Image (cartoon, rainbow over the protein chains, first blue to last red):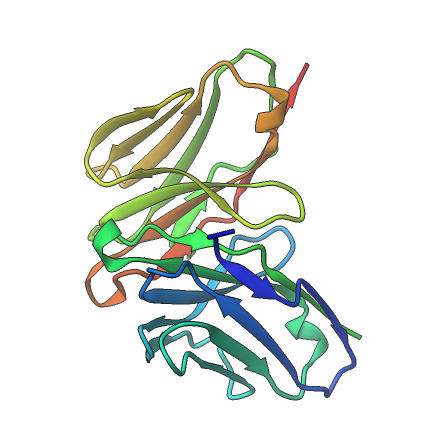
Length: 114
Length: 113
């Protein structure tokens, strides 16, 4: 499978716990994006990387959220001290800058905070 | 004020009909426009991209862009029950926000036999 992959696909955690999600982009893609989607809404931009550099973070992203892409390949998104409001689908997408920024999405990680 | 607005749904059409989905955006400098389809519980899947004014056709799908009116639409001809999904309009504003997509809230389409 050469598409975007995400792990885990589902995560249930208790409030206050830390969680980490992983995204593996399409191999030749140099850009990687994180979005969050809640029920009945479109995805909301969180942050993105070009190679290993984090170029932009949304104001939606509180200090409890951190993302890395250490070698310009896979990325991790960590949420510290989770809150019930963090419950959502976390989507990763990747693109190649030479393809007019067409983004392809992974299957998502569904987070439920109890 | 939302930056990307889609026509309120849900939209219900009979099988074989044309489904028309509409989207307006607020940033006049926006450069790239995308339509994604999202089945319940799944992630968005790219259907069409459009960058220039006019129409772009791909099979049963036609995207239309009018930058002067800040309007983009998606027409689905010969609608099938398998087209039933949420359709998301996404806009890339370009410039310093190049690559960052802003999505509308989605329009739920139901195609009934």
